[in-house]
Every structure is written in structure tokens, then in C-alpha cells.
Length: 359
Image 1: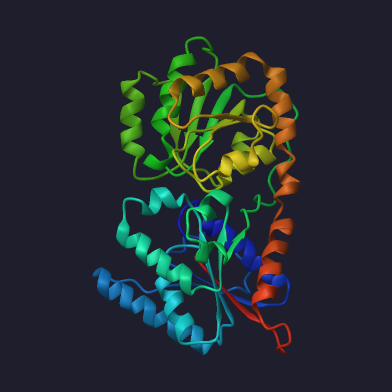
Image 2 (image 1 turned 90 degrees about the vertical axis):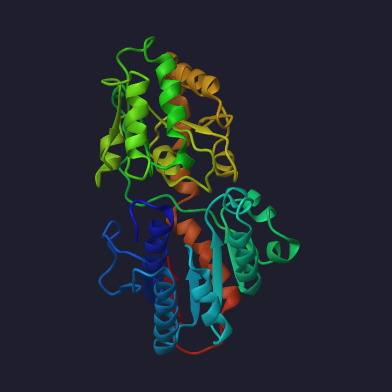
């Protein structure tokens, strides 16, 4: 499992749920850094690696098929890339296969015909395809849409309770430092208002390939001492629970886990209304958060200014946002997975079903 990604966390949530339901579960992954610990009865198996990408790929396919056959896997759930591993096994076995789309398909496939053709091939061979949003599903052909099931990510369990005291004068974001997140937009928008609100600071928590570029941009905008790029913290939710607001500036997302977690803790939230519709599905603009157009620096700055200028309004948005903790609870979302799996598996078969969650 890699870094702080949403698919990794969802894999662990589902694996724990399936274990509690009596299934035998394995998690196969590319890397395991221990970010999301799992119950000791759930094996986390790292796929083999190699310097040569072709050799690496073939080794992983061989390992996956051998492991799945040995353990008589009845169902494979693929929550991340590597659909070909699972697709090959599906073709030589009687197992069921659930694939998933975790991000905006337009951003992933419109400029990459090879990736798009592979995706269409794999989705066509799956028993079901899980989408987080209607916009993701509607990108694909009718044949794939018929296999589509809408299941959003669950909110992380065991978050700190909503903070009820005075808010810290900090604006926060926590995410992978990647161009997809358009953090330069957030820094620029904050730069527009920081002189008017000199007591406020911006903190962006995360790691990723754009870190040095963002630090250079921060200096270019003369935001030293006002904005920080902070290392990701294992205790991130405790660190941000009393923040003034959470702001997401992404160009595209599925459903942002950081947005959902911030809302669940009743942080006032501002998000770009980006494809594939995740923010727009969760946030009712002006009711439980604010939506702004993608890439619009002026609109983002104006939204931040509004919440800083109207703390009572920000408080109301945060209180309403906290309802996502129930609406998207792990229990509710896992029941939707249970329903899908029940439809796909032979309910008359004796014995426990074996479930593999692959991320």
C-alpha cells in the first residue's frame, strides 16, 4: 500500500469488514509501508519486483495467478491499477471479478488511447465495475454502464470528534503533492487575501513529486512565513481538527477522501467543483460547504474571504458538513459492497467464500 492514497485505505476498510463477516481475505499490493495496518489474520502480500518493467510485469502476473489458484479465490476486487493480472485469472478460472474506476476517466484516458483501450477491454470482461460517481460511469459505453454500480468511498472510521472550541487561524489541505491537486492555485488564491487577514496561515500537508516545485512557487509568491508545505503526519486529523477551514483546489478527483474527512470533522470546506463530480455529489453549495469553478483563482480567493469574514456562516456550513460521517459511514458503504457481492456469488454454495482485495 502506497502513501496516503484513497484506494489503499478503502482496501483495508473492506478487508476488515469482510473478515468480520466470516470471509477469508488477502490483500495483494505493490508496496506495503505500513501506513494502513490491518488485522493480523489478514495477510498483506507484496507482489514481486524487478528493474526491467517487462520482467516485473510477467513476474507479477505469474505470482498472482499462482497465488489465486493455490488459495482457491472465489472473488477478486481490484481497487487499483493492474487490471490485467486479475483479468487473466478471471479468464482461466470460475472466480468473480469486480473492477473499479477511482478517478476522472476523462483525465486518465482521453489523451492516452492505449490506456483507454486496455481499460475498455478489462471492464468488458469483468462481472461488475464499481464507480464512485455517476459522471465516472457515464463516460463509458452502454455495455460497461450496465455492469456499473455506484459505491462511493466510506468516511474514515475513528476520526476525532468535531472540535467545538475557538478555531485556529490556519487554512489547511492534506493530499498528495501532485499537479492533479493544483496546489499552485491554492497558494495564489491565498496570496490574494493574506494581506487582508494577516493573522491567518496556510498549511499544506503531504508528500509527492511536486514538493520542490511548490516550495519554489511559494517563495516566488513571497509567501514565506505565511504558507507552509508540511510533511504528511500520521496524526494529521488531530493536527487539523481545529483549523479555520479546509480547501481543495483539485483539477479532477473521484471522491476526495481528505475532503470527506475534513467535512466529517465539521471543518468548513471549500472545494473546486471538479470532474468526475465527487465534490458536487457530496457538497450542497452554500449548505454544507462551498463549491468554486475549477482553476478560478478569483472565485477561490473570494470563497476563502467569505468564510474568514463570516465565522458564524462558516460554523453553520461545518455543522451541516458533519452529517457525512453518517451518510458515508463505513457500515453503510460496506453494506452496498455486501449487496453487490451477494448478487455475484453463488449463495447456495457451501462453505465460506474467499475474497481477495487487490490494490
